[in-house]
Length: 266
Image 1 (cartoon, rainbow, N blue to C red):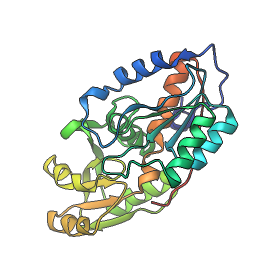
Image 2 (cartoon, rainbow, N blue to C red; image 1 turned 45 degrees about the vertical axis):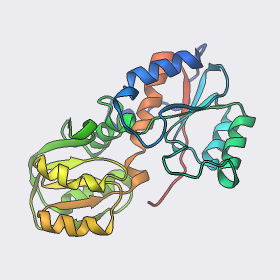
Image 3 (cartoon, one colour; image 1 turned 45 degrees about the horizontal axis):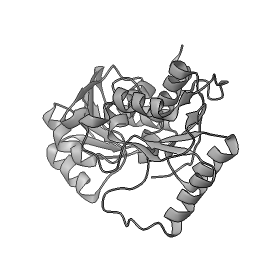
Image 4 (cartoon, helix red, strand yellow; image 1 turned 180 degrees about the horizontal axis):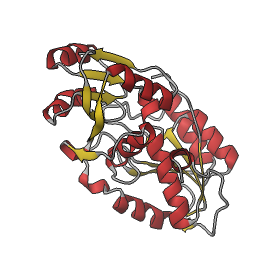
């Protein structure tokens, strides 16, 4: 199986008899080691739906557009990386939140979300799958909660080479800042909004750090630390883990699955 097949897979496989919701939830919570993580939103079941699951929709974020696609496809469950009920949010069920929850409840679809557990998982995690998509050597998962991936390239390359690799895999030109003339041999990365892990990556010996987003302070930090920072896009960098999870559920339980896009330039 080549890299493309591993990253895309068969998204419309016929389902078997399916699995009970509680059994699936227990399996995922255990396999993804949910209890090990201090997170910003609840991991696991966020909205209860049908008791039996045979068809699983997967997406990066539980948007209204994604929910509509999942309903049309006939999903019993929607599994995402970015779910709802984030720490510090307004908890009232009004406006946009009401429309999303109403659409999900009317279709009796379960919503399951896995945030940091999906980033860090050694088999289907965003960081592992991102490195695979780029063709980088197998990553070590280091740092707090195993959220920093690190790999040594076969030989040192320039920042333009890494930019071209990222653009080729993600279909977008990343932003690069910092010591752009530095040769890169040790790469570290964490998908999504992990720009503030830059100093931790440098402490782990990285010549460059790749994440999804960038803050104003990130540019100054990269310059002063003497490393290269690549902002590859939050959505673009986190498309792979949830698809790997869908494939895993198909192999393990025979569930039909499909990945639904809701493209985001950030």
